[in-house]
Length: 457
Image (cartoon, rainbow, N blue to C red; front, side, top):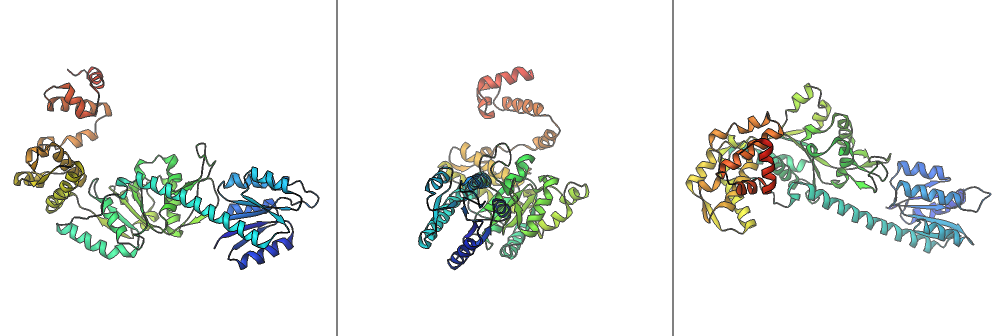
């Protein structure tokens, strides 16, 4: 049911238009002055505006209406505005269209033409919004990890993962908010996609936001959207992730990184479904299932004052904890076979599987990077293997002596890490600078500059 705002200073005109439009399925808001129009715009979502160009009894210049048109466009450039003029004011109507009005109606109006103009403009504006929303959805899905392109397959051979599969089957259709916890790379997004695919909103996209990758200054705009002019670079309206996920699922990864000053706004959306775009006072309402994930201990974050307890309660109606891969080694062979098939198809390689020694090496590895690390190891093996079957040598797994490298890196500066990586690359390729540079993703000259910088031979 299209929502229209009709503005005229004459009560009989408003009454007549209300009677006509209500009978044609419109929801009508009315205003008798430019100030009244702007108040409605501030508080209501509208599909079209029909305004008179004159409001003072002693003027026919149309200046009030033209100024109102400018202010409407400044507030919502995509909202269609149709102007009304008296007979003999066609030049004024043409000027209004030159300034952005979509069409004009002459008083006294013809009902059929009035309805035709309004319906046409409502349909055109709806098509424009659909196009903008589709573009925003495509961008959001492109920004999401894999963009949802990979099929959802939760591989579960271990008792722990089989229990998670059963839990997903129970809570997936319930559309309750779910907090997914586990180490980096454990498969939290795969669990989120499994929950989404079993939900009532599975036909809508799952929109992902990595809270850890967003600067605090853009976080609110990313989640809730903004209107043109809200800040320096806001040259056009932008649809936020909550709007894009309306009717579906919003996946908030690294939820512990949400700035404390924005957690109250996130809590409000979870409680009421309501929010405002940055730079606007209009309230939007959405129906979104929120799945969140973290590798942090949120109870500790709450205790130390970095995370709101009431927000945590809203997020973890149900909590799903994914154990690290080293605690569910039964899943390693089927996961490895899955990744082997996936990467073999992608790189057009023919590989039948793994040798027994290769599978044993995979099962015995500590996997500090969890499933993500396993995926990368298998992908590299697909590229390195001469063909036929993947051997233990093709896996290039780090020996046990390297197990402490990750913990040491946590305590090193960026320059120290870079120096260490260059030394290891040179050692791996016997001092061959060309091969070391290629492995590091550097040009030969860039590598030599770093060798000189760090005093390496």
